[in-house]
Amino acid sequence: MAVRHDKVNYPPYPRSVPLARRRVASLVAEWGHPELAGDAALVAGELCGNAVLHGCLRDRLFRVEVSLDGRAVRIAVTDPRGERLPVPRKADPDDQFGRGLLIVDTVAARWDVQTLTVGKAVWAELDVAPALVRT
Image (cartoon, rainbow, N blue to C red; front, side, top):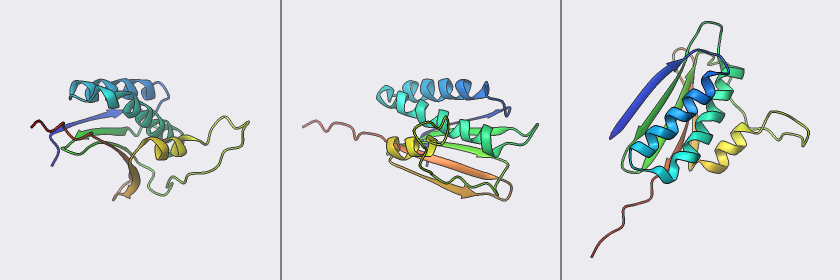
């Protein structure tokens, strides 16, 4: 069960990506985990960028959901194109794109894709450090 939860819909334009990235970082810091804010922003930016480039249809919004429970921050980006599942690939050194999921795989503790009735959700989790035990 999520202790904290937020969801926002964004229009399918590149200008939405930095808006979502900043919101995710701000929420994670506000929710008591400023040490994860940078990684959360990076993951959100990559997932949102993929949604805009590969998963969105004209005039169909994509959604960013952020949640925090006792063990992880979860970032999920939902888009309407369930037939276009993400696949990590190896980018050539001169490629401008193609590293997003590799970055997510490196930064996040885990990530996956959930197919939906309409569309898909790509999610990633960042583990929260356990609270220090006082004796």
